Length: 234
Image (cartoon, rainbow, N blue to C red; front, side):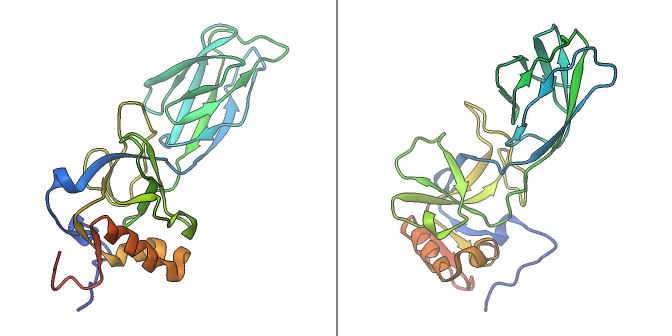
């Protein structure tokens, strides 16, 4: 009997059906978030005419970020909930909270209270059943990336199945920014049985016949991909 998913409710048991233990089979992980997008608007009433360069979004939450100038050349950035995510200076790349950009001074200096609003659309959610990879032998904090092409299907890489966010099991969640000393995901990477349905839904089209190669690479790590879960012979 092939596995038939409940499409309106994704549970941990729809993905991982057997493992030795949470502590052994699972690991904290950092996954590089998909890029989002941003739009910048000067706040009404600005005195200065500085400009904001291209904003790169990598893991930032969706919402409106406020850039508030403290002096003509220094500013503070606040997140959508009003929390400070960092201070910056004109002419120097700002990089915090999943946002990266540079502000360039204009002919008219900025003054305290001037600012910009940056409206962020978050990157796509990590789909339920995503497999990630990275080169073997890296430290625990080294970033993983989703498998998107067969170029990553080599024996010099290691693989894992995304199980949830930094709190625990989660389906189709948006990754937080990668921050030193913290993790933004949980992965299953060894000695477990996982169901094929959702893995194939995410990777089957892109990989085609090489989806079987991915299954074998996972099996080599002790991750058995099961299309029939009536007899779990792990």
